[in-house]
Image: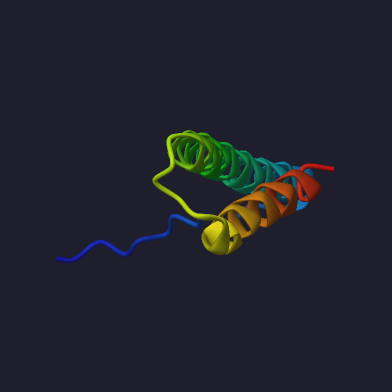
Amino acid sequence: MAMKNTNKRSVEGEDKENLLLQYELAQVEAIDESKEKYRKIVNAGITRWVKDFQSGHIKIDSVDDLKKLIELDLELQRDDF
């Protein structure tokens, strides 16, 4: 004889709202962590570009790479506010 499953798993009212807020907070924290990692990568790229430029490995016609890195860094910072 099979037993009928009478368990109901539903979240209502305040509990549902709290779970939704926790989920949204976790998403925001994950996005912030990713942005911070990306900013570190961008900053390392900028530092490397400047060192390569100072040592003569990069000529003035390749400044576009630095411009892109700086714009990306500024975009990531803008999202922080």
